[in-house]
Length: 162
Image 1 (tube, rainbow, N blue to C red):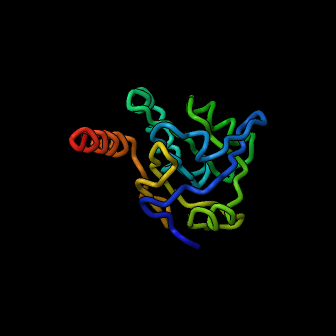
Image 2 (cartoon, rainbow, N blue to C red):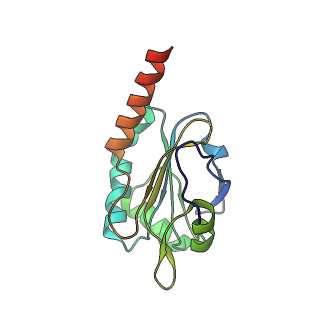
């Protein structure tokens, strides 16, 4: 298991979306900054709070050109119910393989049946990791205000260098 570090290319990952579509990461996010959130499941109150926070921040993140994708091991029906319950407008994947996420992304896996601990990545427009946040239990995760602040910081730095 290798943890992803800043500068690493985010591995190719196929995300199953409710309704039968799939999203290919990081290709689908190319051209702008992005956030990829792995969450424990719809049963986790901290995950629900994180997803709601990213939904509330959508206008601010969109203005900054930041796209968000989330996924868990939950099945399609549970994921669809979660999306509906919180009015999520960003893509939320379902039926992820916890072991495959551990192997590809370094995510910590717990429980039986296995689920992925909260893991978050901020990606640059080329699909490279800018920040990786790994949790080994319920707390410790990306928050939208930190993401927005980071993107503003990176843009200011790029402007100053130009």
